[in-house]
Image 1: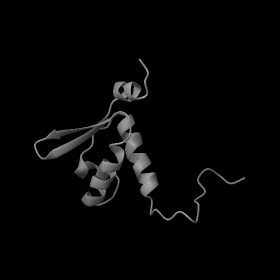
Image 2: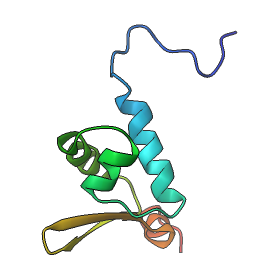
Image 3: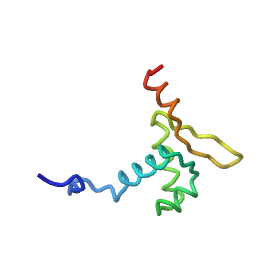
Length: 87
């Protein structure tokens, strides 16, 4: 049996899945991010950070708020539960 950290050689995402999961985990732990904090914290460029934000928009509980030109990304437990149909 292989370890859970075994990489599938047929998947060539350049760390995209790992980074997306790390950003989501950070948000679930209570962090608030914008494109610049994602770029700095997760070592990617700002354009890639924008793509991560767009990908995370479909995750239940993720809310994006605009403050002027800045888009702030947060995860809310209650919003995630509502999306899951839990009352």
